[in-house]
Image 1 (spheres, rainbow over the protein chains, first blue to last red):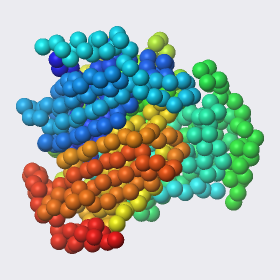
Image 2 (image 1 turned 90 degrees about the vertical axis):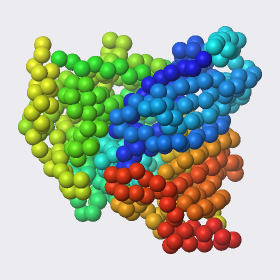
Image 3 (image 1 turned 30 degrees about the vertical axis):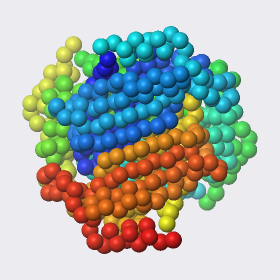
Length: 139
Length: 139
Length: 139
Length: 139
């Protein structure tokens, strides 16, 4: 299945060339993933923080196909490309006006630990994993 | 006395009009204040965080006199306008090419508390207050 | 009348203290104003840019009443406090959980000019001014 | 040769977990590349913009090895991995405390065009190419 999220390109996203400043795409995909975890996986970043857990990004591959301009609305499409014991692969595609603009492949790792301790990878909570697996498996 | 800090205007600061996107001025003055506390007051934000303390901004007044463009270098000038028991007034002026571009007047409050507790205003640590007062009083 | 816009506080808005980093409030109010001009005034920033026009902020006064945390949803409420020949006063209030968190009073000026020329204040286009006046005057 | 640039991790870089918010690494590498073009290649982004040229990023691969915290200073090390007719490969490594924290491999393409026209890849200006080649070839 595909998780959709629209983001309108505003002044704060754009550079002096009038197109999206590319680090802002990563801010957008972080937002898309954050909402995916809250709405689909049922475990928000606020809840993770309170439990001294999180899903840091350990790998990102970004390909830019075409620029996006002020006022355009991106249809971000997130799909699960891999679900490991404590990691996940998430593909984020930015579609707009019938064109693929940017592809962002992310690998996130679920980590946890004590309040002042180091965070270590740990298995997904079963309920979270089940919800993500159901989403990924749905046609 | 005046605390100086140069910031070169880069792509990430600018909007589609090719000038500094105004919320970036506040990011810059936050950076200037952060370095002032580390270098002049002798108490860095990292040290404050570790002690569950901080200096949140409670008031900001920003006046824009002229735009600043990609490639220009701002000479930020910080001065202490008021030093209270647990607060401080900091004026930040952005000078460039002989012109005042932006003035940012900030009021910060020193707060502290327990790790999970609410933060409340508390008096400046005496050594911090003494260093700021010496800086403010120097000709 | 009041123009409303909800913004959920995400990772990208927050600082190491787990609360909104205050320059992000200005990014949010810029977004709220940008959407107000598109939806209410009927003249988007993208259209203004194409016409070598814009609405730079010349004055901002920000008062912080209480912190906002990751996961909270701000109800931004924009009202018109003054409508001049070429300027506008816009009050932005951040409400959340029954509490006013932040107030941002902005003064914007409508400017225009040639593609490479300096931008100068100019009167609001009549249709834009009429729509803003109708909004401001509605009960 | 290696181009070095130090960046101190400040409040604006960090997330609620107290570590660098990963899209900020891309803002930093954009800044490092921007300074590399100004100082080493002898062609600043401001000069490129004025000539309706630029070096958009078309590919980024980011690997996170270890987190970086508020107050740490990153030694960014940029090296040229490939110099094509109109493209360049730039590796950016974030070193801190004897550890490699992040690696960012970027591919940039030199583009140009008319003021309102579409930008197309074009060969590096010879003087720019020569300076980059001399830097890349130096032991």
